[in-house]
Length: 428
Image (cartoon, rainbow, N blue to C red; front, side, top):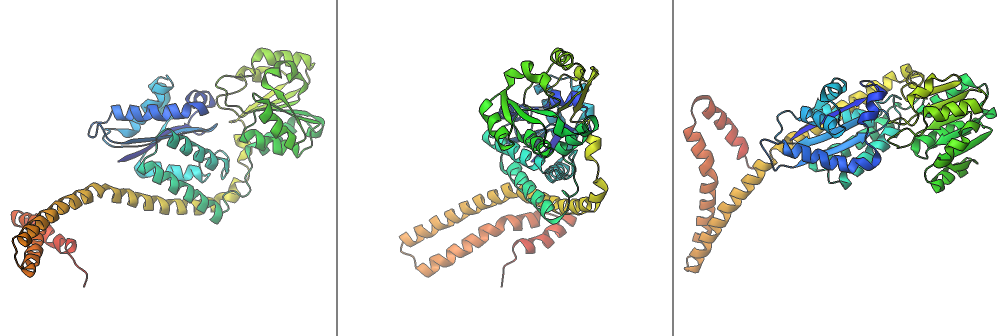
């Protein structure tokens, strides 16, 4: 069985490409099924063998984890699936992809879940996102023995890293970075009207950070009004429908957006009207969504300060020096756990051999048992029957090894001669 992880992230691909490769939440199940079919159609040695797949898609990364047998080049096959599914030229996508086979795929999963591969070093959100991805893959039938075991160990490693190191200490979250950037535009957030578009986990975190600055007003805009109201109520804010944005957008000084929309929900034309209505008072906008919620051309407008998820990167790097010791500890833990998992993988490789051994031994046992029953039916002495049964079993079990030893010669015979005592060693 070959494990692989193929993907791109904030270090290998620009936002403009990442948003094209991102999977919407309601696409994940369909994509997992499609990936398994893609692998199955390309298996050579085991055309009916089991294939496994899971997809992780966040604002910073899109990754496909796979386990399958009988593929000539599993990482290349996986990479081509991503290009095919999103209707992208493979030549355009390939330079931005990392393709990680076997232990490198496992190591990568462990590092991602532990927050070592995030834009915000040590951030805890990625672990929850990974657990969601695994639940979706399982619901779509994408998990089998190998990926299930790998992800269970991934979560255990992440827990160990976070509980035994200070990897999360001194970190600056994306939400905190958004507050810092807004303070470069406005002296006091307490004088500003703040709008949050969406009601997911990232918006909840941003709302928490901005609410601590006591803004003049706090509003949640969401497609489902009830969900928006539930979040707004926690922060003494109000909620509006997403459909009401065009009429109300101009009243907000700070706008933070993070939805799962596959298309922009705030276009250039709308923001042009907003700037005019505000009489050129500045507006600060943060787009944390991938694909983007706000058309990138908005950034070219005067009096509009638009930041994307990548723009926050330099801000969140502060404090990284203080975490280097924790990173070294975390990497050591991960390396040990990777080796343990690969040992488990190696052990799985002999399972078919053990199963065959059990089946052939069972056939021998049943044949000798039937022979003994016939002897008893003829009235032969039970002690003689037991003696014949034990000798018959021993002879048949030893026939194969003895024949192999007699037919071998030279180094092969010497190797068998040293190996057989280990195979037939009995406890005394």
